[in-house]
Length: 413
Figure 1 (tube, rainbow, N blue to C red):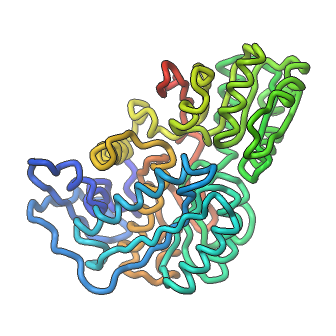
Figure 2 (figure 1 turned 180 degrees about the vertical axis):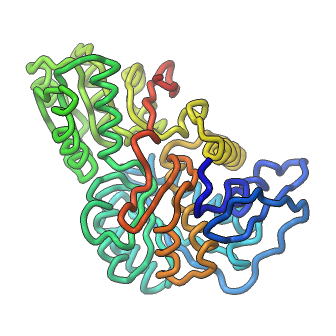
């Protein structure tokens, strides 16, 4: 079990109000507490009394998400989770005895709007930390701002450059980065499908370009030959021309790297062209919007994702407890099931709250030190192990392959 430098899972869930959320509706409310040390190893104690209400000035946390625009299928679940968790945290007693206020800004899926929102959150609202953004382009646009201000930023986007290229001291991420997702997808192609010739179709934005570059770098090591590479613009409504060129190269499988709507367009066009080759998507389609947009063409699509989409795949007891509680809380609050992106937001705020509790401070440098010392932290995306030189925290083993069958996600073992 992973325990070093992490408040144990039951205590974390109680601090976030998830045990309260799951227990509401007639059952006894249970809260669990543990000392906020960096070496919590003992079993948490249980207190059945209601937590004292938070008091004092609120702890202000900023968030920039794509609640509207093309990336809204990713950003809206993130917004919903952050709003839900603000209520739950405060109902459970707040953080450091103070209420938490999450100021959520919508960047409208536009990096320029993300920059404006970030400047407002830092300069006007004086937030102690920032969660964002939904897309890689927006995240890359704001990370120099948070770095210059010395404000901790928890990113929810996957481009390698977010944590691989300077400035890196003030940004940590919760999704698996492109390198991990590409490695997991390519391993599936080489070992499970057993093919050798692949084609790549990718979005021209930061996320798509990063993924395509990673695939090009890693494919030869697995004995895979890329016979064609084509790209599309994020808002393209037809990629038939690109797929026709790909068809002429006779690939045995197609990897599509992007977030909706592009991948759904590609799935429909692939079917219209009668191209009956395996479609492997990116972790950017781990939301129901892909299935809704692609319709019947989504059937059989396989993609890498965190284990949140198939809880039965989780073997670590601490992570399984976190994910099970989160799923139950989300369903109780929204009536729907959480997708991967909802999980990214949950992990971001959970890690941030844990860091503040560990530091016993909202000082930026103290939060930075606590995040860098966070290891063995169970989240929806995997077991997070950060350090001063690793702000990704996850490994390829934290990912599984998901297949779409009958309009639903199933674990592609």
